[in-house]
Length: 158
Image (tube, rainbow, N blue to C red; front, side):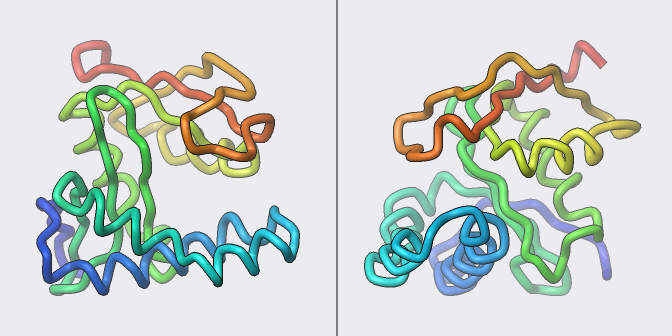
């Protein structure tokens, strides 16, 4: 893959972001919820409302002109970070995390099942994390007991 460019999301990224977020949900969340939750996701397609409501706040990772990942930062809270399943292991996640941390991300919630992946991605990298909670309850989470909260290190603490 050529260089990874992290840039502001644009209106024309909408369809690519919808597809990326749906693939991400099906790969990383759907295996942990029951069939009723998957059916509700299919019926409601919440990624559409999310993208339409927050697209101007997203940053995307692009490689060879293709959207490969995104993050959503508000204040110091990293609300979302997603890497397309086809780009996992390619450095897209590291590029997104590096920029998110450099622009102020200090808090992140992840499923317990994904916490190991986050820790491995940051070990030996330019950043670091420290765990500060179990069962952290974000405003829109229905699986609070399955979340782990992390505090991301600031750029000056590295």
